[in-house]
Image (cartoon, rainbow, N blue to C red):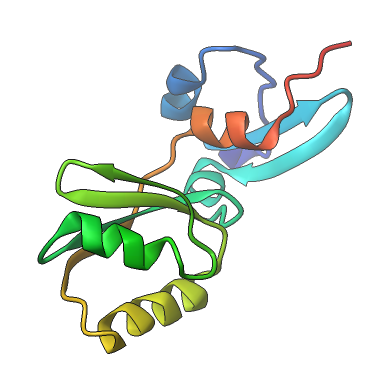
Length: 131
């Protein structure tokens, strides 16, 4: 149908299923459009709420104490052998953060953003208000 320039409007609370069958999505709350785009754009390019995961080589406690002092690092938690935190910066700012960590003599063996799904994006951008 998309080749014909047509689409179907579906409303559902089962977002995991929608992301498997839809190519685009529109998130509306209280009649206001909050987000529109392809599933890939919305889940991969939303820089407003990303979770960064870093696996350092060495002590996690010392590393997490170092990280918590850096700008842009919020809600840091140790999870197994990694530290995870919210990061609202751009890709360039993430690169600058990595450079700062390495320049401070820290050894990093993993540096990545947590993959978001449609449900996590929805929960991050909506306020839960109903009419």
